[in-house]
Image 1 (spheres, one colour):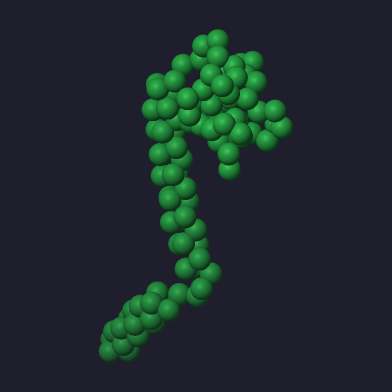
Image 2 (tube, helix red, strand yellow):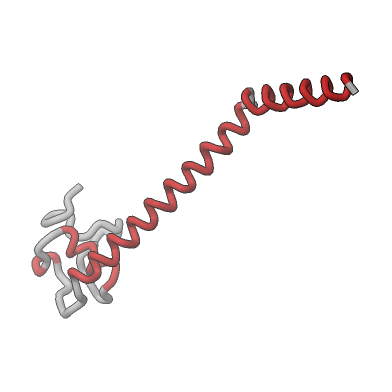
Length: 102
């Protein structure tokens, strides 16, 4: 009986020590799940921002940079409204000379 109890105590101590000294691969997996959770939060924030932006702007007949009042507005039009003429070099950045020069 004493050997059985000693085995349980030693086994518990070994398990405790093993959990405290995890190999680096397991730590990286935990960091990966933290990064995934952070990415998910960023995606949620981006979709909320997009919804808020879409309520600020509406597609109309405007198609040119000279008709925009901000880079944010030009980006909305380029992404959401058909027939815009705001990205001459087709790099995804509208109105580079007027509003969105990066």
